Image: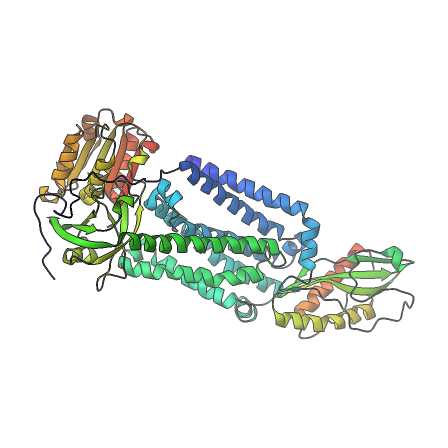
Length: 169
Length: 466
């Protein structure tokens, strides 16, 4: 009986370590898989719609682009950062924010995973509106989209986290 | 109800020519303890891997987000609970290699011991997830529960599955189970397979360890498919194949004592039936009102082709009605099962202890043990009439130059105590101790011999649930 427990514990430790080891080795691949569009229930949505602000005409900021940091390509003082991954009850949301000086020049959605089709539809409808609000306000102090309260909350939180990373005031 | 055919004299029917042939010794696969240890190790690996998978699916920001800790607790309890449910199914899938080492009763004991865990973990999973999602959504608990049930794919049927599971858990509580007939309980218990099937989809579709992880999803699905395959093969396929091969029919029913009958069945190729003395089989007599239930009864002798014999004490409606079995009734069998065999021996000599109807398994075990095991046999029965198969046991003991001691009397007055054992079995700690009988009897003798310094490896027992 005592020996049985040892076999069980030894196995558990081996299994635990094995999975962690495998995960550590394959971490980048696993992350990209998580954000990939191939996964069922997980969808990546770019904020494709929404008017591009004309404040920085020279800016090569493509909506839907999810590059994590490319200040050189953006030229001048443009910096971008990924916000925190926000869980909002129906799924997860992560945004990338690009700033230049005191302006927010672009917000893209890096990860949008929703657990059901309805939430997916609501979120994809709300995100372009949220994006324009953020770009217009140059900050995370926005009204949000009514009817998509949780998505709005997550969007705001993620944007704010990214702005904090960039020390953006 | 027809009167049972009664023949006096030999333990076996006359005729059919084979009475004098030596009992066929089918090659019984040996129990390999290493296989059970490997299985244990694999079970451990699965547990560790399941836990690690839950951890790797979690990120720090998810955990610190509102509702994060509760959702994580929900994921963890869900994963481990589901994994333990898988182990539970495997424990009763009767994989022969494992069964030979632990015995059917050993496996069922583990199954029973483990049972509260998956059920309570999965109930906690449902609760934690609801709480976590409600916190994240800043919604009320009931509102969130409604959203989970109606808006999330497969959660509704999984919840129905959980309901069935909890219901089965409740009726399996000792206090309630003892009020149900064995058949009712068993039939309801089978719905557990349905409950598990219902809950499978939501794990794969929504589980954070599986969404976006095709490899994990594949491995998990394969594990469940493999388990289902084992259940179908060993709980259904093998018994059907064996029954078709041996085509057993009731040959004769003979009374052995008050409320005790032996059923002798005849069949084909019984020399190929891999059975060892002390084992039991699940018997399904294909007559009206009986065909739908299978009951475990010990073989009370090694098969003597073309015959096998089981001896049954009337303790319930079912066993009482067996006296009315008509010759010619077809029989289906599952098994043989049980690790209560000569393969369990660790010493050359043995002491065999039986209480009440436990004598049936002792009888066939004794016949199968090496002839030089100088057996000491202790039999306990309430009355002399209850000492069924007494003459047969006495004959076997004599042939093996062993000793037979009989204790008669009421359970309290004539219990086997320390003094008896020391006096009757002076070399107790250098013998294997085989114990069979009702659960309470077996437990008390096991405790007794343990307290007298007999090591666990040398104690072998088979308890009859009455």
